[in-house]
Image (cartoon, rainbow, N blue to C red; front, top):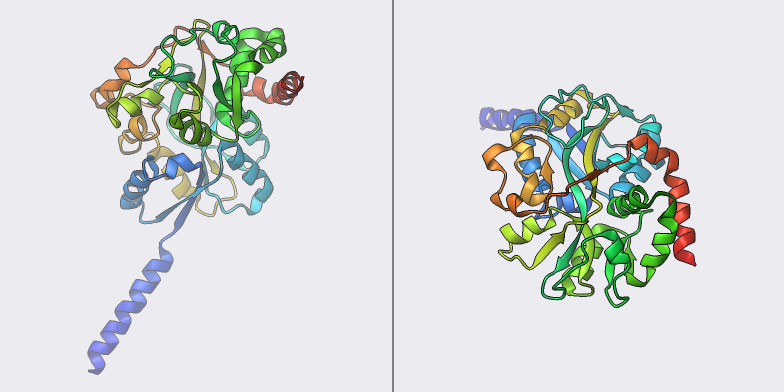
Length: 333
């Protein structure tokens, strides 16, 4: 019995050493990305199949919370990669000094804007839009002006721009369209705002889908999920005459990571078909690369904004505090 026992012991030791040797890549992201219906589970399985590692997603409250956690933890952060920041908070994230150049080829990108950033790798994009319930609202307003001037009983659900990237996106949308008149327009919009939630999930799933209001700030791509997965045309986005504000979601690697090569491999993986094919119906956004015929047919039925509205990240960083104060003062009156 001695030899089999020694062989078994040797095998256990080997397996134990192998398990200890397998590295873990820690990725900070937001809850919907790693939900059971989100892209996270499939992406974890696909990356682990090729990385000989463990991919550990850590879900924080929102994209803004990812940035706050990174700042709080500083150089002691256990994060190797942050996934889910967007262009509106990129400059603030860069200022932390905690992010490293991605070293990833961006030649495959297919975005509405030119992208040359050396730190942030885009993985999807979309337009902010109001989604409405066609069974509650037959004729939705088709412009920001029409929404502001609608009867007071038309209610909308928004997200707080201090805690939510869609909320910040709408603030930038208002600022891009109205400029110096934004505060005046925020005051005029007040009667229509049922509530402002901390994040997108509460606004969309907890309130809008339960019929609390007929319109919610979301994305032009949101109806794709309902049409393709729920098999219903009930929820649609409405095209606004002024154009729509663009959101580009990005990932970046953390400078202090003890898995720099693995983090770099993950950023490159983000632009691979294995990752990108999970985006359209699981993150419900446009993929950052051209999927060709693999893009679900329902995307052909989405609204197509005639004008893309966008501030450069540094412009947002330079003015964000002032513009949020302007919104706070306007909505407090």
